[in-house]
Image 1 (cartoon, rainbow, N blue to C red):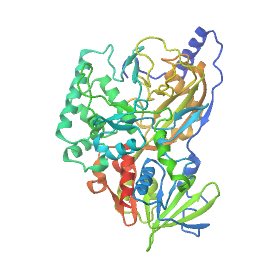
Image 2 (image 1 turned 135 degrees about the vertical axis):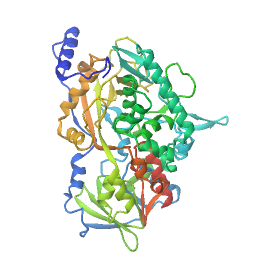
Image 3 (image 1 turned 90 degrees about the vertical axis):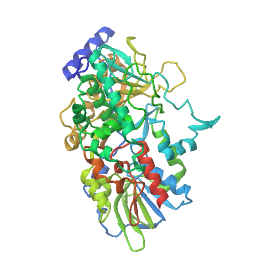
Image 4 (image 1 turned 90 degrees about the horizontal axis):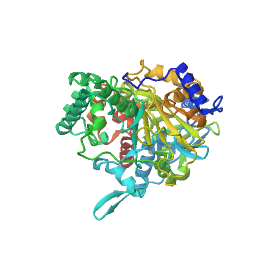
Length: 543
């Protein structure tokens, strides 16, 4: 790793913390409580292992219920499908969700009374290709037409300052390493910006990909890893590569050596490109964010559904019949098996779960599950009894704060959007992908997932404190509790060749098989709100 960027080892953390405590006149940090929360890992594994009291077979159910449509899965895609059904005048449906609340990766919680995200924490202002998402935001009052132009509610746009990076001992504005870098590094930044701009002109990079088929140019990029493409282009600067690796881990859960060149370019070209330092042309991405992250959106999508959402229901079987579909679910709260008889089913499940529960899965689903790989992930929410004492060196405290060279993705501050400037307790949300990156041995797949499940919460606490105590030596003194949410299959990794495998017929607007409609971001090959929402919307419209 480059200078100013190595992650602290445990003994380094202990020494650094001890020094900070000595300066503060304290003998030891107060006890930090915590544990795992947010996801019932045992419940998901019981479904995997067929241990839900025989619920995974077609034996006689405890009860049979009838409805017109069953939505299997309550993430963003499932919620979008429910919204589309209601817009079409269909109110007779149920939505079955494994966890205790809907929202998937866009759920949120509270820590010591402060709202915080358990997963995704922002939504970029969508472009015109994401018209369905734009319609949702208009419906929720987040945008309106003023004097012929669309304007977004500034209270929900990320307040400034938005981003900063701890690099070479001080904070700098933005996340691209700039201060103190050489002219050769700056030249590499400019070269990458030119290549992204050229590729934007050569082909159409779109969000959501749910609306288009891959072009030959995209498939050529898809055949290479992003790292290999950068090598071919002579883009070898360590600072540039670190930043691009961070971007890939942020959106895809794995680093530039493990995602396709298409995915690496798509990160920039599908929005407003890549801007080298000093380039003030073009518009930068604005983002919508809330203290609870994208749970703000998910909760408003779920609210009109009422008791049609059945939480703590594990879908164990989906089968087409002569007259419709049967969907079996295990009600965790009552320990009973429910069979739902319906005309159709919208399968808004990750493909690895869908392939397990759909009887006689169609070829498209078998192909998808054979090729989609997932990144493990964790989110740690840290309650602070008082704001951090910023060292005053460099950029001011921001919403998104990243430490150069570390394995984590930095933290966001839950109180950044608060209008009251009075210092008060807050929550920092720290993100750690466990897919492989340039800083790690290969922790993707089973190894990263095993690490996620086997390590005690205190080990992740120590990793967090070691990483963030470098810029914030007072963090161990101020932290009172750390709640950790684990995702064993957080997001699909757009590995080289995946775009080709999810061929044009699958990637078009609707993926159906008989009485089943499939809707999940996995079908786009990567996981973002716009993809999940659009695919769910299309499935609901098609039903």
